[in-house]
Image (cartoon, rainbow over all chains, first blue to last red; front, side, top):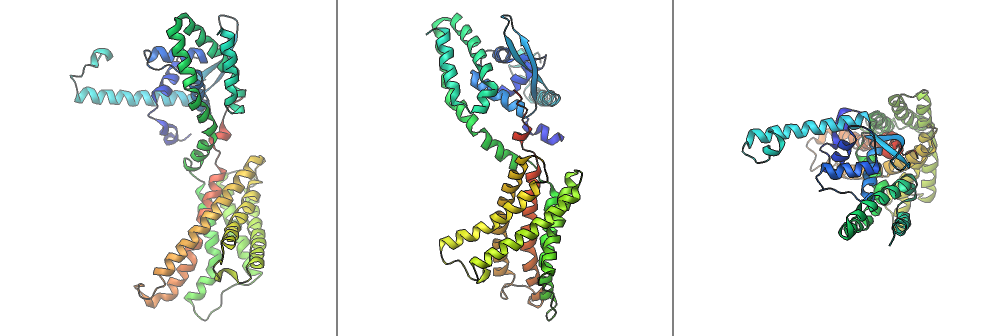
Length: 121
Length: 292
């Protein structure tokens, strides 16, 4: 995929970013992603099941994630898992890089901002 | 309502989604729904209320979005992809080639270049062959020469059939404006028929039948758009370029007249080539990896 096409979706929506971030450590099933997004957004974003699978379908179509197979959960049920593809990882990297640049610019122009206390800046 | 009741209701509501979406994600969605329901139950009534509001409140939007997704993806695949530009150049040159004999007559008055059959049909074939060949070479598939041959033959047959049909219905030719709405509609159908035929033949080069439909629809759309653009550009040029009062170099009237013949054809061909080049691009829908 040409570079400009891959990065045409950046900046990502917060929900897309959090789903990709949730899958960065390794494969996860739908419920795992849903709980991760809730934790990562500190409870601000809680997906309904339909919203989550709409987003998963879109990410599958974009080839940013793929099905990793099925794994048993603690109750012995088979669950389909999703994993980041190379493209998905590159998009996530690009978004993190973009956010980092924005943070650096903000630090430079607004050093007194209260948010540095939370980000360690 | 017990857990099974909630899941039963949700399973029924899943039928509101498109069948393909339900087939791929339905079972997973029910599982996740059951897990989130169990979490909500642990939080008591407020948790259950929030859960119900979220799940059922967002449902209409989600259902609508999934039903609209093919349409939206189709629009993205058309406007979000670059066409195979070789098709634009190839068909643009090809259609220009077809208009050259008539254009030369305006530059060299008294000399006759207008080609009657069969030389005219040879040019028609060459126009299609040139566009098809460049498109085929750009696609880089084995046997791209067949793509050129299909382009030439389809152009020739479409020209023969559609032109014959046109003159059967309208014996006066293109000089007489349509006198009623039905005739106007019939005139609009000619470029569509032309495009459907050429696009369908070009699409048959691919093994997948979806490409035949895709090429045919893009061909029909491209020809209709090209026909409208051709009429518009021709009318614009006739109003300004061929108007002695507005023409800055009346001495070059022959040249302007030849441009009047060539430029609309160049635009006509370029638009058709662009449409066929776009048809060859895989849309996101075709690339979807939704293996169950």
